[in-house]
Length: 231
Figure (cartoon, rainbow, N blue to C red):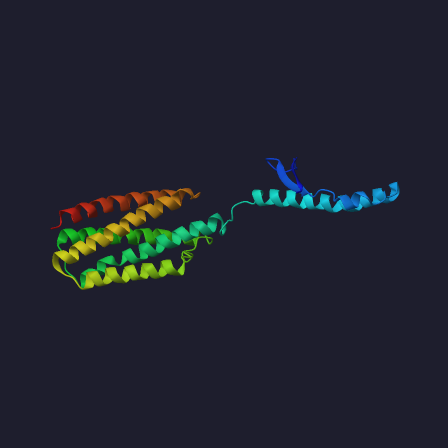
């Protein structure tokens, strides 16, 4: 069997020493009987065998260091990630701006109707402010959600189900469904506003997001309390 040699080599640019394991085969007795090479030919032979080994070790060391030093991939940069968040928020505020239109077809108690109209009013105000921010900053876009197709499809299925639940029910059941969907929407709006604000560098937009999150949380608490009180 070959002898196993453990070689530790410190290389520039690595935090830890690179370790290369090399197995060197023993010399077969047949080769021991070969005549000795002249000194000049022996040195040439040594140089020709040493160079490939040095190249191999260098490649291993550089390959090991580069694989450990690669930074995590950046999927578009901070501006793109912020725009993804704003796109989700803008779509949600657009949808919630029209939620009170359900009362054109359906009836609810005044307490329910008034609270839902407050949700719609808050969404309308937020949408107007987002439009104003976009006018000031051309880098701010609201169509960059980039959701995977499966996520897009699952959201559409959920939205269609919520719509059918609202349109196909009436009375207390309709009110419960409506309150529940608005509780979900306001809770999500509060969370996504907070998440965007964590990385927002613009002071005006950051304050807007923080205020919107608080407004949505307050509405969410009222909706949840109303839902708990419903028979």
